[in-house]
Length: 315
Image (cartoon, rainbow, N blue to C red; front, side, top):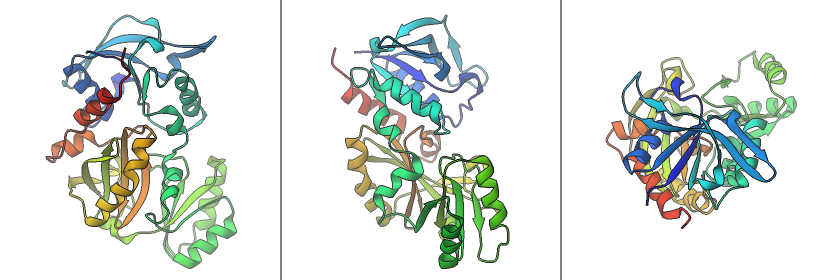
């Protein structure tokens, strides 16, 4: 039976359809006959126990520069929808957290993907700490003495904002780098949260692998190789995507965390693996669907909708 699907996302006119996973999910939903509604986070309202949004009917097509048509806006009770896709990009800030609280009021009668309660409790760089045997040596703190001690032990480290995304604010700090103090001052000026510090993993030169999991099961992978002179592999800073398969260690990582993702209603996740180490678990707005498919991997969008349709509430 066709579903009514509301998509909470960033402005659709600004997306790059060649790499946007939300767009891939919308295309697949439409191909299955589901009705699409579009709205932004500022269109979301909670009043007297009812969650509404100013939604617009949406149709999509895979045509650059002409990829969507929106109908007239109407205020809709989201409890009347079958599915809500929460797909706006981080930062994982209080606006994002507030949206999870609001959407939790309609879930699971309306299936919110991913489960808003568990999304709220799974920020990328903190959720991964549940699996300490899979991750590299890691420190989360605001204490500069602790950070200096960590560098003294591991010599070569990576500094990252705890709630950052897309590679922004990521620095490699070697043993002899005299800029550590200035970097910590900058983090203090721009962020109220602690920083995350990890031992540098040299295998990043061979790539940072993005692995997709759908309902806890492997759904494809793509390797992202940093540009020359870059410590970051994110594609918008010059990382090069390439075809990838799983090593035995990566298979073990997927099998170790998959059941935890599925049990939490984290239907669509993207994990990052460097060498033998799990570095992040992305559940807020995972990407990688198009890249995996282009290199001959599974159609993760189809797998996501298979999982959603298996879980959707029965009317």
